[in-house]
Image (tube, rainbow, N blue to C red):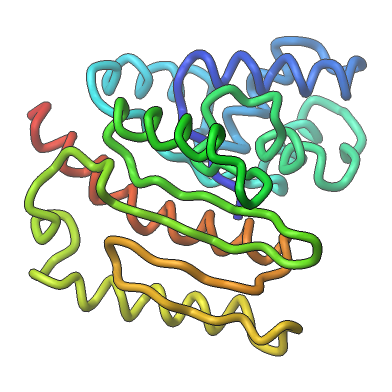
Length: 222
């Protein structure tokens, strides 16, 4: 499922991109449908949580296109084009994407993503594209909380590592190229993934690694 870091800049970008693709929607209706697609009953509820958590790392939302379309239907609109919200959230129109995607060997993009993740204290998740396949790479060196056992439940993150392996097997069952998994929780690589599969697995992994970071921030706020 697509994911979105929830803060003003990203939300403004998502809405602007959707308005350009769905110009027939009234602004207020689009705002409410977007809130529904991000897991909130109303736009007011979304705004309340943005204010509540303004001083910590942003919330991470799962993007639900069914809920987005259903909310638009309550305003009398036909079903929007399939995948419109998903494609926007995963596009370069979003300034703060949780996952960087660039050509393998692009050291400038790699270093820029490392610096951004370090500033924001979040896991570094990258998809490196080659001619046919992609490599998914991640590193938790950019997370501020130490030790990592605080976040992942044990000194070696065994339970989290097992979940990552399960996700890998689920996403790559029957895949071409014989994807190769070399990892632990804190740093790892998956080689020979189809780009679309790499994107799905990257979202799985970022969600898994980021949620404990955000929960730790909530405890600090309290």
